[in-house]
Length: 438
Ligand code: GDP
Ligand code: MG
Image (cartoon, rainbow, N blue to C red; front, side, top):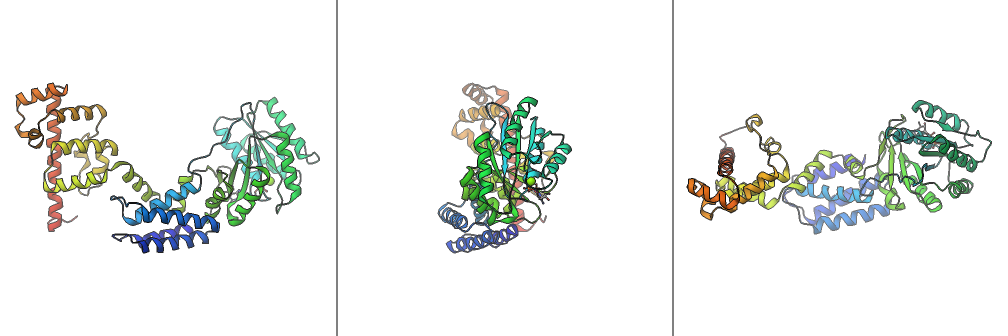
């Protein structure tokens, strides 16, 4: 599938020291093939590859990432952008009920989705009403009634001899009477797009003025799903798309192209036949599902958010040369605040016993005090804290608006950190000399 193809591509980039323009080009050729094979719309693929390549070649490679990770990062970000960036929520009506009309071809999963959506709303303390407006498909009304019964949501119907427009209108009146705050209208589909169907849907739209018109499309149909979406959108001005059958080995193609082609957000997805197989659509989650590398992505995110790369590299050098000063200590505390508890990071160093680390979290107040204290020191004191005697401590406490106890606490903390740094530095040196083996 798409996921394994992309992973193959990224694997080839792994282990490379530097990315050349040719590497990017080769990788992009493979990403392109993988996307096309997953049935992503050709024009969407072309634009996607262009924007990724432009960024990959032009952008500075973060020092914390390998070139391969950097490419993954860009592909991921562009995928998210393509699929709409953020979650797209239902727009509630100013005056309830909020009316949601589900449209789509026969077999796309409208009736199932109507019930899934009702269940989702119910879980969020809403009171939905299902309206059976498919009067053509045999047993369509019965199907909705059975599903409604399963989730304990009322189903409004007038049988199959009444015009769908009138059913929809009566359904909304019924919702007001029953004080239901959402109305979900299940409409009829056809095997193929036809004008009669489209006219009927337009009539319902103009009579009931739904707050949401959501197109239900079968994700398994790939490019076809996109064509269907385009056609429904030009006739009905959709407010959103719902992708069904995104389970099993469904290719991600439809998810990637629908938003790009129709400029209509994907709001929900169906991932199976059961009524719980339903998800709110999150572009970022879909992207990591497509890329199949959630772990790497969160690692990249963490590196990106937290670490000031140059500083980290300088610090490492100082640790190794054991020139760790109070100024570095302050820097380190500032970095730590950004990165979260030091413990979490130290845990990643092999051979460190976390239980011996104690509480190493840094709070805002401590950080401000530490900064004030260190700034009240002379250059010499910062570089060589062992000269800080009692009278110097008094002066520093006064200058920083803190107490002698706080100055002592900072100096002790620094001493501990320096010891740890030294141990870590020795460990690395010894490793290089081959004295230790893990
Ligand atoms: P409608 O004609 O658009 O109303 O489609 P239905 O709701 O009747 O669904 C058609 C078929 O697709 C049924 O057999 C459903 O069980 C199945 N179906 C619906 N949604 C999903 C889904 O997300 N995944 C899978 N695997 N099957 C689904
Ligand atoms: Mg149906």
